[in-house]
Image (cartoon, rainbow, N blue to C red; front, side, top):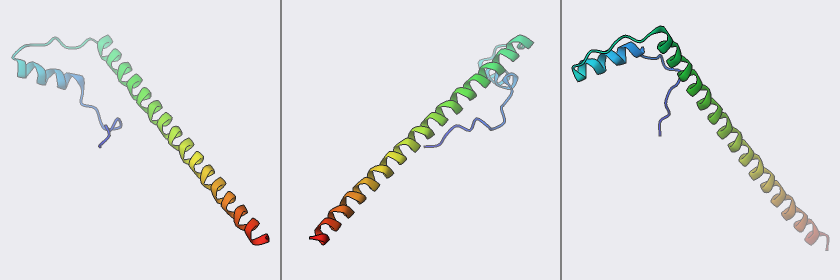
Length: 89
């Protein structure tokens, strides 16, 4: 599964709008400065939310890895102690 590259250069909204307008045969009014700024803020929020989810997933995987390593170490120590007990008798 490939991941979306949020760091890739963005295609300007005006380019998207021009393509849509051409495909639909309609004319779109240009975006106002406020609309452009709002879209940039929305993209930044989405990018931050994506990065936060990725960090949470990475932290969860690290916790799982540490728990598994701890469990494996406990099992190893248990087996080692059992072998020592058998050897001592």
